[in-house]
Structures are given as C-alpha cells and as structure tokens.
Length: 268
Ligand SMILES: [Zn+2]
Image (tube, rainbow, N blue to C red):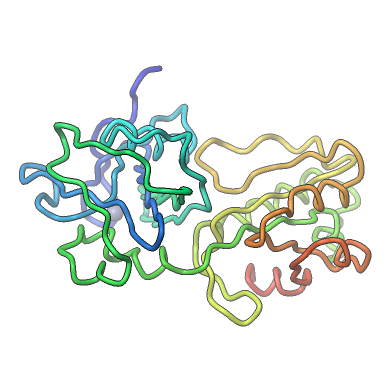
C-alpha cells in the first residue's frame, strides 16, 4: 500500500504537525508500566520521551496505523496486544489518536534506528519524565478508566420524536455523527470521569442500511443478524463495556447500562 500520510499538515492552531491525515501512536501498558521511546535529537520535539507512533495513511484505521508504527519503530508483534480504546486529541485540521492497549506480559521490543532508546516506565513516575509536550498534555486523560459504549440504536433514536419513523437510516446517521463528537474524549458516566475509548452502534431492521463509516472514525456500526437485543448482549462481553438502553428486558441481560437520557446529557 502507498504511504500517503507522510508529510506536514498546516494546522489552524498555527503549528505544523506531522501526518497529512493526522497521526496515531500506541500507549501500551503492561503491569502498570508504559512503553516509552526517547525521540532522537534531530526529530521534531527531539530528546523527549513519547510513545511509538507516526503518520496515518488514508487507507488505514487509526488502530491499524498505531500498531503499524509501533511495529516499525520497536519490532513489537501487534498480535500480542489487546486494544482497550482510542483517545483523540482534535485540532482544527489535524489530530493525534492515541491507541491505548495492554498485553498479558511485556512483549519483546527492540530499538530501531529511528529510536534512541526504549524503556518501560512505571505509570506513577511518568509525570517526572521529560515528556513530549503533546503526550504530556494528553496523559491525564490517557490514564482515565477506558469505557466502550454499546449503543442500542433503535432505543436511542426512538426516544426523541423528531420524525425518525420516516427515515430510520437518516436518524441513525445523525446519532452516529453526534456520537463521533464525544468518542475518544473524557465524559462523565455513572458519576465518574472516564475516557470514551470506543463506540459501537448496534442497528437492526431498516436501520441496517446505514452506510459504513470512514476509516478515521471512532464510531463503528454493528449490524444485527437477528434481533438487535441479542446483538447488543453478544457485544457487551467485557467489564469495560457499558450498554446504552432504556429497554428493561435488555438491561437485565447485560452487566452495565446507562439509560438513554444519560447519553443525551453527554451529547447535548
Ligand atoms: Zn494544531
């Protein structure tokens, strides 16, 4: 595949950033230690510690870009890591996506020519290291509990009488556009601040005609093969998954839920 991401982006914040389609990095945490790399002196923001990462190509997802860059820079085997979610730092015209991941044990890594040095740093010590400014800015949000929202789309869309019954696909697309604005960001949920690391929108019936989202989006579509409720239950396996539904029957079948009204509070 062509590497079309390499290049500078002139951002409306007044800075130039690396990555024509944005950039992505891997924040890998194993047993309370994070994998960091010292950026070479000659690099942009050189001689600071950051995470492996680089420009995203237009044909990759954010997660694929972060894992590819980490593999190139540290020889990490991406098959050994489990992605927990994505944090998005959005500028006007550019963005940096941090893919937060973990592994059962420290995977083997080795120093690539581009990398001066790699180290596993205790999370408690991180603020005392000379960190890359962008990484340091995102760090407090990267350390929040990561939550994936599983959205019962029919239930959410049906909760507002805005004419959704005339155009279920359009109503679902509007919901997904709203959700994209909070995906990858910190939100208040069940009384605590969490990082919304991913959003899955489960659709059924006529809403299944909703188009696939662009590769750089964090909101994903899950088309139920049978009942929407069964698909939601199937997706909500992990303890970090929170289901958005006000359907009493569905609430009894999944471990953690928030009512539809709580989602609207986050979105409005
Ligand atoms: Zn910028």
